[in-house]
Image 1: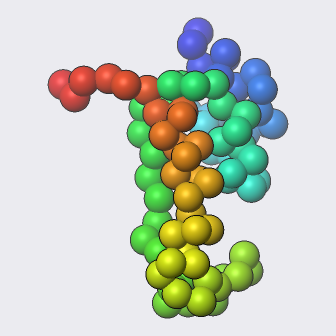
Image 2 (image 1 turned 120 degrees about the horizontal axis):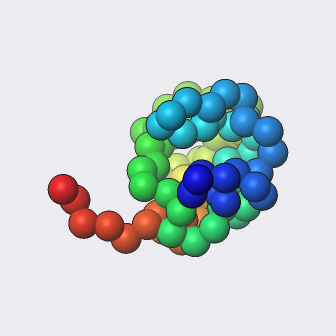
Amino acid sequence: MATERIFSGLPKPLYVTNYGAAYVGDALHLLKLLPRESVDLVITSPPFPLQRTKSYGRPAGESEFVEWFLPFASEVSRVLAEREAS
């Protein structure tokens, strides 16, 4: 199964379904454990740190948020598979 290859480098998931798995942890760290082009979909939340204080801090403004988010965007780009929409 293709998902076994992806899961092999990751910690134990919180739960697994036929559609994928959910993991608890530092998202940037977990993304770095995934193989290149191994993910079909990534969903992120809006930039709430610009409006609400979170445990991971609150960037002072939009440029600081972009600087904070760029490492995530780079890893998301690396793990997203290039596939045509059907």
